Every structure is written in structure tokens, then in C-alpha cells.
Image (cartoon, rainbow, N blue to C red):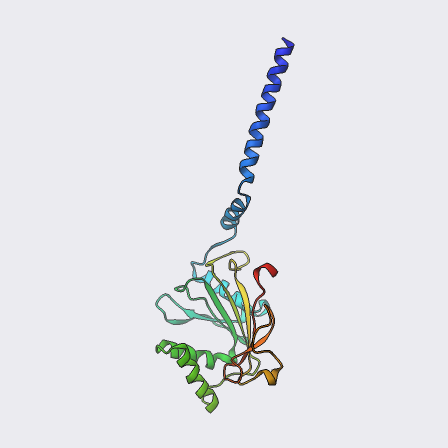
Length: 223
């Protein structure tokens, strides 16, 4: 009798162990998928309110300056509106909800004539080349104010349209920086005309009104 009880106890223990191992194996088959699902459910949600749009777009600005930034952008009717008034040196152009992905920009207010002229010409249906040529001529003649030399543009962009409500960070978004130096050249700055590598400054559109120092983000595997 004692022998039979011992055998039954061992059989039960083995069955319990096999069940436990099976459950463990199932859970470990796709840990990345489970983590991604949990992360999505817990952290990232759609940018589907005006409050969320403003908060995520302000991420383009330096953190210490966000509270005082003016925020403008296009509404669902394609009209340029002011979402938030500001009192510092920055203007934020909010992400356009009608376009895929996410792209918000923060720029020094002295660049507003240059930026506004670009928006005006695009609204007229001008192509990128036409806009460049028109502003080039206007800047050279002095008609177009190019702002303070060294004024910056901060771009916060990425392929996703979801964000973390706690931090306001957009999923997968990165930063790119532009420092405008109208008519600067490689010779006048000492910078190369082509990027040496990610996160290395170089001068783009040298010798033109749109000459600027470009600093692109590091590759994903280096961040």
C-alpha cells in the first residue's frame, strides 16, 4: 500500500512538472512580441486631441523653453491657426495631422519671415525648386529677411503617430538640427559640404540664402 501511494505521488509530481515546463516554454516562445504588446498598451496612444498635438509638438523645442513657445499649425481644414501664444524666442510648427508620421519643428522667431514666405509660396502651388529660386532672389535683393545668422531650427520627427502621455515623447521620434548661416560656404565655416557621418555637422546649400549647418541624428544602433 505504501508503495502504491509513493508511485501515485511521484506520478503527480511529474505531471505537475511537465505542465509547468510547457507553460514556461510557451511564454518564452515570443517574449519580444509580448513585451511590445505590453509597451504599446501601457505607454503609447494615438495623438488624437489638440492637447496631445500641442504637447508632442512642443517636444521639438528645448525643454527649458517649451512653456513659453508659440505654437502654430494646420487644422483639419488645412488652415494655419495659432494653438498657443508664446512669449519667448521660439515658434513651434506643430505636426500636420493630415500627413503620415510625425514631424514638428521649432525655430527661432527671427526666421519667421523666411518660414512664412515658404508657407505662402507652397499655398500658391509653387514647387520646391520654385520656392528656392524665389526666396534666393528676394534674399539677395534684401526683400526677404533671413533672420539672425546662426538662428536654429529643431526638427522632431519619426514614422509613428503615437506618444507616451506621461512624457509626451513620440514613439521612435528623433531630432535633427539646422543652424542657418545665409550665403556661408565651406571656406567661410571650415565645414565639409557632405556629411562625414551621423551626428557630424556639415554645410548644406553652401553659398545660397538657405546655407545652413546640418546635424543629423545618430543611427538607431548607435543611440
